[in-house]
Length: 203
Image (cartoon, rainbow, N blue to C red; front, side, top):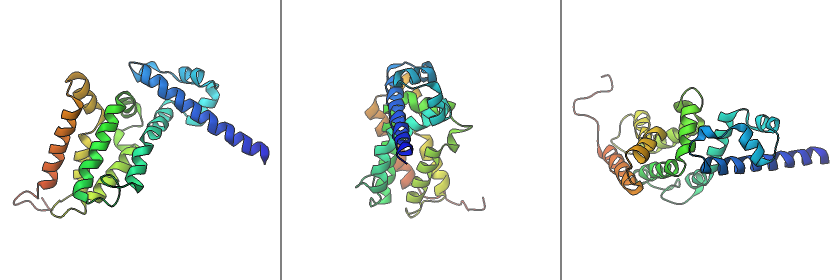
């Protein structure tokens, strides 16, 4: 039993060391593609075998690092106070959730882009996307007059995609606060709109 507990502690320490090393490397390099698994293993002081056993592959490491960075927001969403927490009125919570996600993408541009571009077959199948979509859909369902919360959640999340954020922040050089303002205006217009006149579910 002591050996097993020691082994688990070593695994936890190695994982924390790898995530810290990867975090530092991604922050320093111009492109996520410049960071290799060998680089991370060397910086963390572990063997490549340990790295692959813990994370599977590079995409697995990216996902783990992304989730580690996202953890404070996840806690705020699940148990925190308004405007992100579960007691927030839906009309206030939806814009706050999307603003938090946009800010996270801006603060983690390279990592978010690498994950969405190089992750599993589609960014829409990523665990974090499904989590945000479910959260938004649930909040939207509580807003009277809004139809098709599933599609609306998809449309709102598309405004925070990493490739769009990278395009606006990088190529277009849209300032952070301006981008947040644009997103807030877009979200508020969506929430204020009702079903199209003359439209039906069958159409």
